[in-house]
Length: 459
Image (cartoon, rainbow, N blue to C red; front, side, top):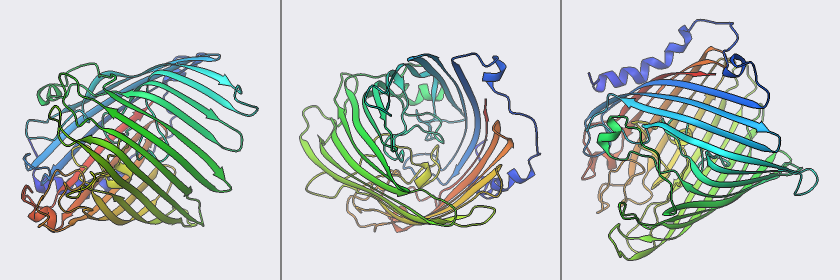
């Protein structure tokens, strides 16, 4: 049975209160490591998550008005350290139930029984100078770089980004580090709707038709951190897959002062994207130069109180494509977006594409068990003629205005059993602006309302 608008609204508004009723538990958390007798050299961890999510007033064109989904994710990771050589892997099983042809369920929700990590690592030690520590990793692996806005492992989304290739890391004294990588991103399979709905098991694909590589460096100066990076993406057609033949280069810089009680914190991240891509997926399509920008800026303060409140003002810009000239829509590469733009899953209208958004974040942590936040965003289109963020809604004539809407998001998390079992619940409402009400392919269903509830065991 598919809940309607009222059901989704109730889920968004009522569920965030439920953690307060959880029972206190004092038992020690269960771990696989201890259950196996803590074997020397072997580290093993696992997790299991079950989530129910519901969406009322679908924003994506052409899909059912209301949608709900049950997702399950199980992981098992192990690494054996045999001195300078490490061998590791991670099995990932992400499945979804309750979707249909009118649902937005995709391979971001389903990636059944996949070995997302299978690597061998070599610890080089201080081979690059006194006080350095260098490691080489080859095989399948996940990556978190810097803010994770352009390269990161997904958490809220049921399936994750992963890569096949080689990665070299050097950490020096004085808190400096450098990462170099050359990879083939794992292209999640299956990709067709019928197989996704059946949770079909199919090995993810990697190949020389899609390459992702780059350099990422970081250094710390007093209580400030600076990060400098450049990423490259090279995409080609293959017989069974026509693409836009992207050749993208994305240099960027982030400077931040981490949050700390009683002081101002901030971060500013800017990236410029250039290169070329084809104007369509048709064979022999003309090439077009790319020139796009991304900016994230925030300033906040964590107040000196027992519940650790933090208030921050936030601005985000990711350019869209404008008529004539270079292609201007920013490509967010392999970056998660939940922490900036709200829940993903069957929700996720906002993202790092054709958006200019201002907002405020309010975070709190009353106890080691309980934390939460409330976030507000007012979002405009950078280009009124391009598709708005991740909605798929577009007015090529630019006659529907440029205001996308107001989004309010909430979340509460509570450790039912500390470090073992956690309840996570929240919701979001997008109050449609003129653009989402009047654009030619807008659904016209009303304000999208979303809620979710999940339980995660980590062991």
